Length: 54
Length: 228
Length: 252
Image (cartoon, rainbow over all chains, first blue to last red; front, side):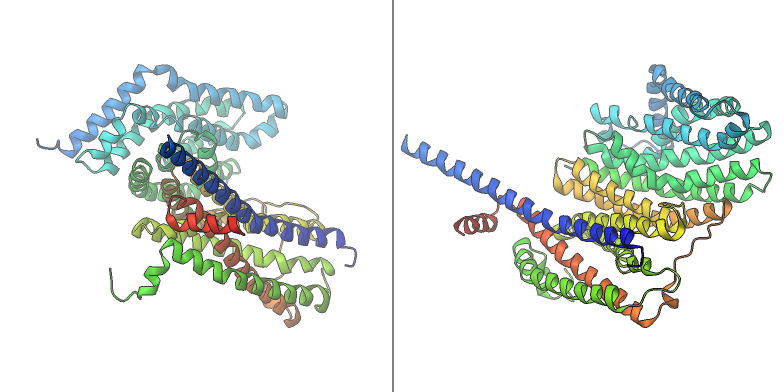
């Protein structure tokens, strides 16, 4: 890189790291939301069963 | 029931806001005190050298006034939201934009005008040459209403939120960049003995534009923020 | 509703339909982005010769300039979607506007950092108050303001509408800022900084740049679709179709 490697490679690293973080953040958010939704549904159905049995 | 004519409604809103501000006179003094403190701290941080202070005086006074106005901006609609009178204003038969314009005028009279009055004192503390002070005052007279108007739009947008202090500053920064540039540009030009009319004229043109658009935008923003 | 708008466009505005549509298109967008990005990197880092003035440092241009274009392009998309969201109150337009903002902020941030890394060896400084740099910084603050306002509201839709209004105010502001910063810069010290213009570029430097631009466009679509899908699931979590998806993911 003709003496400029210390500037060129960090620039490319920033580009890829920031975009990767941007890309994977919604996937994590999606998984968390679905997990919370499943937990909520499980709680709801458990409560319904309890009230039906009592 | 017939609606009150518009001028009477405007006068009522203005009188009410000014009365409220007068009952809490201490709050009016706060931004002025804040500006005085900031302007006092600058020489301590930079050293008492007159030439340096003279060079930065115009910009420091402008930024100080801007920050002091930002401090008071947050409270523009807060008490009205808390006691529900802002919703009454939205429901009033008169055009909301005009009534909000009156509220903004009242806010400018109670926060910006005291700051403009003490601005020569701040400038004097920082050794701004006396012949530049009229230009500084003219720039402030044009810039502060614009900050009040632009700030009012943003305050209206955050009307439905709890924490808004820092957010308000973040949103206001891009909007006040041109205002600061032209106001400080006029002062700097006057200081260097250059013609300062052009930036003042730009400020005036921008003020005319915001004077028309900002109350309308403020009304739209308020309707968005209040309809839950 | 006007009858010149085809029915499928109306259908696309419904969250479950768009969820499936985005899910089907997203892998293709990502694949195109990666492929074009790889080609552009090969062309830019291997094939293109070193610049006779700047040596190899100019190779930052292949990510810096596409990012700068995207930062403006995404702001435009956000403003148009905001306008649609405020005028026609389409839920999907709100989501597009609000989920574009983080992507745009990322590109703006990349532009500033890579520009800084380019400026240090070329101009000898990390930062200069040049008109373009300052406008880009203000653009970052505009993005952050929109994102901050959106998250300040308890109610997502209300937050989206308020932030959409701010985005529209912002797009009026961008040219004013650029003009005033230009004026300010000439008043103070004229900047001697010049970035090499695309017109002066030779072909084997230009095509990797344009390819990279296409790659970032596809990347934006892929990222936006992923974000919209996540957002739609969160917004519609009470609805039946989201429950079915939740149940299906658990089975896997």
